[in-house]
Length: 113
Image (cartoon, rainbow, N blue to C red):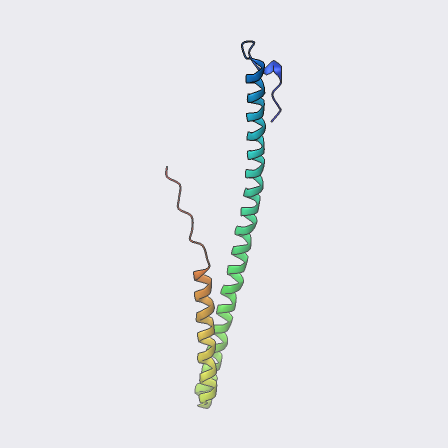
């Protein structure tokens, strides 16, 4: 936005009023600039949260898959140690999943129309 010049004001405006309006305009420009930077920062943060959540969900799926494979092997071999290991992996997956849920922000409320 171009800065106001004296030609932008009607002839009835006093010099002090013009200067005040110019300062107001400058402050508005600063606020708009800050808002744009904040918006870009928020967009980057939202993208990072999405990427992190995806990775964490993949880790939960991997833990659960490995635990299922170990449990199947334990059942075939009737090995209590393997069954215990599968249970530990399931517990780790559950803890990781709970941490993801606890640290994922709620979706913002839809703006009122």
